[in-house]
Image 1 (cartoon, rainbow, N blue to C red):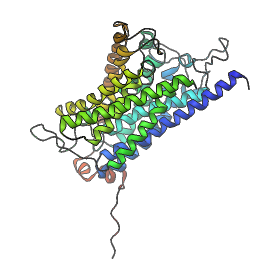
Image 2 (cartoon, rainbow, N blue to C red; image 1 turned 45 degrees about the horizontal axis):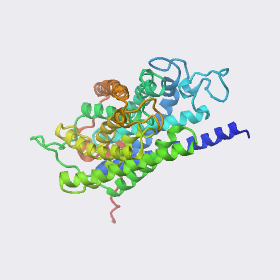
Image 3 (tube, rainbow, N blue to C red; image 1 turned 60 degrees about the vertical axis):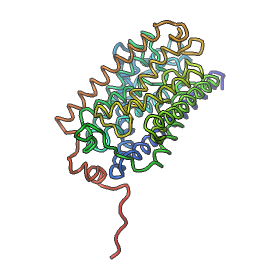
Image 4 (cartoon, one colour; image 1 turned 135 degrees about the vertical axis):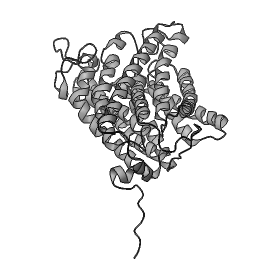
Length: 431
């Protein structure tokens, strides 16, 4: 085996291993979200998190990957549907010109490129499931997931990762604070606004009535699985077995997550009088979301600061949404939307060209406003399109197939009404 062939082999193993870690995050989302909901809706949320990856796989294979990575302007226009189309490989030179130019920088096989990008796409759809839980029709969520992963997510992803106008403007989103987390967060926010809050969530005076989750053990395990999965999410985005780079990105990722956990716990202790465990977990996730964009281009001290700010933002985000009567049972919009935006902006503040991934420094390192302006342009463009298109889709589903279960079904629980089984069935009575 030649040195170049050995490199491709090692890179491919690395990409597939990290993709498997990201895939396993579906288990983390399922446990976390089911633990944060009531027991009568536990099967529903687990079923959505299981099925959403299957739907994402088919939609992204058939349409999404081509729209995202095939050559083109605003969207991929060169073909590539059903993964048909010539790959670009740096090993074969200019004589072998494929249609996926935006991924030509990595020499792993096309199928490996697709699978790694697929698990990111599935993650964006999974973010939506928890936010709209406990009152949304199963069928409506599945249809929306197909639209999100087949059309909305890929088109926006093309702008940043597919060589589109935001990439050309200099925006950096290394592993997806915007492409994955903000897009999923905007889609979730649109769904929550169209569907409305759960019955009894807000009192007539506007105050929020607490709806405790049913299983903190699930929240604990789900949070740890997601933390583990981020070591595939961020270091895997190198799409190459580059020892120094993946080790540095993994450490920055972990520092931001740990900082988010500690700061959120302490801040909750001061803000609400108790070190709420759910805020500890969501603080960790907020730090991980925030470091996802800048993990390749910041030093370790900056990673700690980015995670610390995220730990505060996630708590204030939850409280803000409650004041606005925007009902998100798991805090997905605060974790993924608010901190996806924060992480994207952080590139323009803390980014360093000497670390990697940038051609200029961020504001805090003497680079001026150039990189920050590119990041803000990306935040604004993605926000308008992701939220607007998701809102239109949810509204269309509302007037056609309906998006909300009946009041009686909501009171009884969606496990029985929508799925036909219970997570914790009562033992049979002896005759």
